Length: 318
Length: 269
Image (cartoon, rainbow over all chains, first blue to last red; front, side):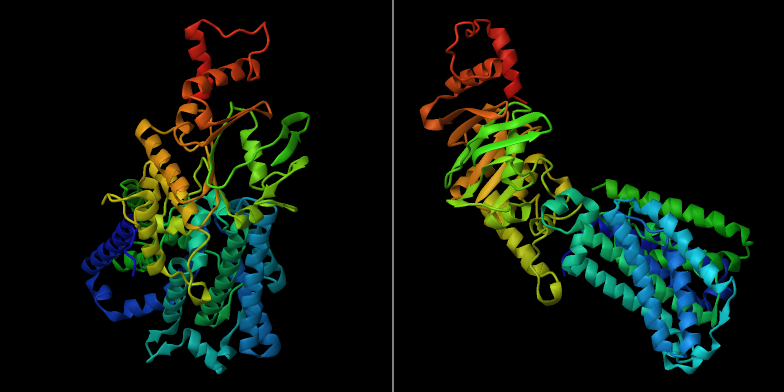
C-alpha cells in the first residue's frame, strides 16, 4: 500500500484522538453507561443513517461542491418506498423504485449544477425545499406503518439484529464506507474527484471530464440518501413525512469533523467515518453524564469548532 | 500554420501569420503583451479556430481541429498556471487524466509510483532526497513544478511541447532549472515552442527566434545567424517602430542609452 500523505495522515490521527478523548471522558463521567455494551449496540443502530450519507457527501465536498438537499431526498425516497410497498406488497420492488428515485433526484441536482452553471450551495437549498414539499403534498403530512415489511427477509438483512444484538445496518455502513474508500483511493474515478476539487481548470486541461465527475457524485448522493431513508424507516417500522429533517447539519458536521475541508481537493473516507461516530455519540453521552439536553448543542459547537481548527492548523504545516 | 487570420470583434489579433516548428527544434516565440502570442498558441492547441488559414501537422492538413485532436497528435501545453494539482503528490499529477489502470478502472498505484520515480530520474535529473514521488506538488518550487509538467509531457510522448511563459515570475536559479528542462526536450528529440517576452531566457536554449508584433511576424532568426546583442537591438527597433529594418529616415536608433534600456524593459519581466 502506498504511504499515506502526511497531512492527511495527521488529520486522520487527530480525529481518532478526539474520538478517544470523548469516549474516555464519557467513561469517567458516566462509567455505568459507557462501560456497558448496551450503549454501543444502541449507537450502532442509530449512527449508520447519517454515517452513510456523510460518507457519500464526502465525495461531493472533495469535488469542491456542496449538497443541502440530501435530507429531503431521503424523506421523499422514504415516502416512495412506503407508497410502493403498500401498493404492491413487494419489498424488492419498493426498494428498487426508491433507490432509482434517489439516483434520479441526485442526477437532477448534478445536471442543473453542471449545465446551468449554478452554484451547488444555492441550487440544493432550492431542491431541498422542493423535495420536502413534494413529500408533504403527496403524503398529506401523514405517516404510515411499515410493520408488514417484517414479513420480508430483506428487513432482517437491512436492520435485523445479528445474534439478537448486533444491528445489521452498521455492517452496511462499513461496507459502503469500504466501497467509497476503494473508489476514492484506488479507482481512476476517485482520482478525478480529487483533481476536480483541487483545480478544475488543470483537471480539464489534462483530460478529466469535470462535468461528468460532478454529475456522478451528486447522483450517488441521491442513491445513498434513499438507502439511508429506507434503513431509518425500517428501523422504526414507520414512515414519518418529516423523515430526513435533522440530519442536515449533523451529516455535514461529520464530514468537516473528519478533516475534509469545505474548499475540496482533499479529504478522507476514514475521517468522515470517525466524524460520524463522534457526532453520533455526543448527544447520548452528554445526557448520560447527567447534563441536560440543553448542553448538547453547546458541546456540538465546541467540538466542531475545535476539530476544524485542528485540521486547518495541520494542513497549514505542510 | 499558414496565413492565419483571427479577429475578436473588430480587433484583428492575427494578420496572416505563417509559423512553423521543425523536427527537434526549439522555437522562441517573442512578443510584447498583446502581440498575439497567446491567440496563436490557442489556435495551435485547438482552443480557438482561425477565421482564415490552414494548419498542417507533419505535412498533413488538419480539418476539424480541436483540443482533443491536438492532444491526440502529441501537442501538449505547459501552461502558465502549470496544469498541476497542487494538493496532490507528484505521481498522482504525472498520471492525471491518464492513469495506469488494471481491470475495472482501478489504478495500478505501484506501477504509477515506479514509473514516476523513473520519470523523475530520467527527465528531471532528481538525485535530491528532498523530493520523492510522494512529495506534494504544492510544496515544490516554481521551477520544479515546471519540471513535473515538462517531464509529464515527455513521458507521454508529446512531439511538440508548448511552454507558455515558463520562466515568468521565477527567480534566477529557478529559471536556470527550467532552461535545463527545455534542453531535456531537445535531447529527447522533441520540439518545443518557448513563449516569452524575455529574450535573455529564450536565447540560450532556442534554435530559432520568431518575433511577433501586433498580429504579424516581423522577424525570424536562426540563432546561428545572429548574436544576442544584435537581436536585442532588433527587438528594440520592433518595440519602437513595429518594423524590423530601420529603413525610414525619420526613425533613428536613439543615442540615449538610458531611454533605450527603459524601452527594453518591455522584453523583460
